Length: 108
Image (cartoon, rainbow, N blue to C red; front, side, top):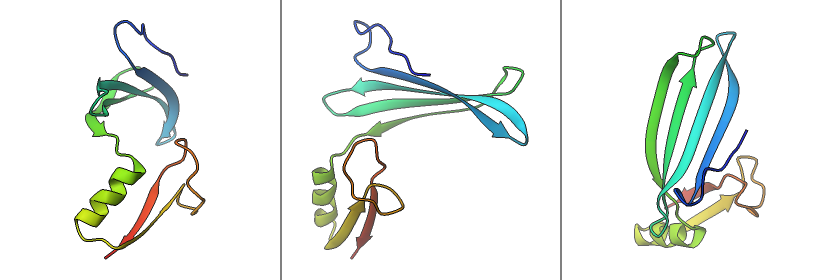
């Protein structure tokens, strides 16, 4: 389930709720993503895991910075890498969409 909050308060907000199995029991996992700084492309990710009884049993909050493919290539060059490949998943599909996970294979 995804939903957006009032756009006047937050420029970007996403909440995902999934059921996950842990030791044969069904837990609820909530992930919230929101922009901290759109100009700098920084997002806050909040993870929560709730027991079948609804008790919070695990949480993890962190910030991430989005880096474009071109920026990442420039960073690799800057630190001395000369050869790399990027794929759209661990099955080495061509990277064509932001829906795919970028997988980098880098060699010095």
